[in-house]
Amino acid sequence: QVQLVQSGAEVKKPGASVKVSCKASGYTFTSYDINWVRQATGQGLEWMGWMNPNSGNTGYAQKFQGRVTITRNTSISTAYMELSSLRSEDTAVYYCARGPNLPIVGGAGWFDPWGQGTLVTVSS
Amino acid sequence: QSVLTQPPSVSGAPGQRVTISCTGSSSNIGAGYDVHWYQQLPGTAPKLLIYGNSNRPSGVPDRFSGSKSGTSASLAITGLQAEDEADYYCQSYDSSLSGWGVFGGGTKLTVL
Image (cartoon, rainbow over all chains, first blue to last red; front, side, top):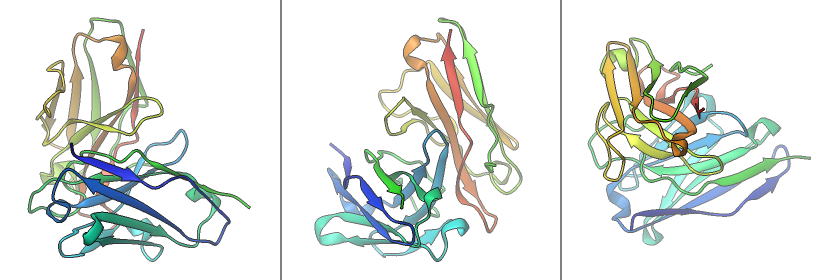
């Protein structure tokens, strides 16, 4: 079955970087976009960015421009999201989610399925 | 605040019908971009409920339906069940500089 499995929880100090992985299985990795969404405790969903695994093209929400980088390793069907210059407000659960197999701009399609989420805690 | 506006909470008794609104603007829903809906149960990842304004993925009961008009969209749930108690989010695309993928702030559905 189609599945996205993310890496485990992380604890980081302010100013550090974190890299979360998202391993895809059950489908052709390069045929579907990957999006990253985060959710602070008790808060709503926030779209961070998108990547086309085939071309490597990416797009990021303005809020995260310059701090977030989405990459991939197609040989192991894995996408990565790296967030730098961490601050306490970045403490959240980070999700990867597959976009549809359609010729539409990143972030416009629906997200299905989602990974299980990775808790990133930023604390001194 | 979120680009898409949802009511913070709605409630209904078992068997009743409830609707959740999602209000946008001319740079997102009003520009013709599709609206998608997700259900998030406590402690779990969001699950796709409605895609492309009104389409249900396989496995989603037909008690859930979506619609879109102008700069707004709505999610309707009929025959409310206790298991429907969850957070619901709308999602679309925004063509402004600060946009791309955008979510509503979420609506907590309480089944009385």
